[in-house]
Length: 129
Image (tube, rainbow, N blue to C red; front, side, top):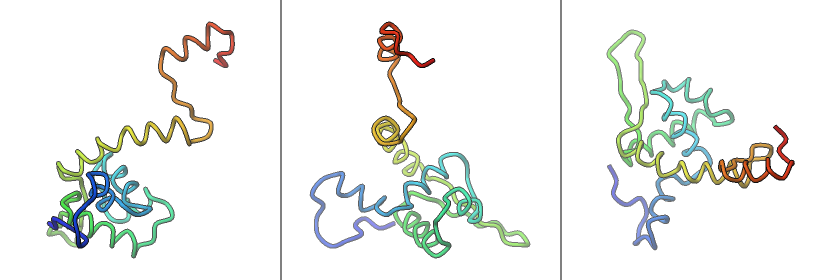
């Protein structure tokens, strides 16, 4: 497991975390593995648009960082499954508020309201439901 992936010190914790999860696909890989352990092909289908080369590279980096576990089974044909380590599960927990923010502020057509906000809208007569 690598302690530091680039030369020099990190500016802050977010800088260090982004060094681990940086890139277009890593967070989506983590979310897919949060559901259940997956084989390579399952991950490829769960993360549409990722190429085999990039998926393989990101899985190797996440494994080196102690986020993902690669388990080989002595079977014919060979079977390999990827799953989250405890460190990876903790990282996914840390990413949950970011996902909630994205659903609330960026994702079109899927507003996330607190129960109090929904009651206020209902009282004003503007509740679409």
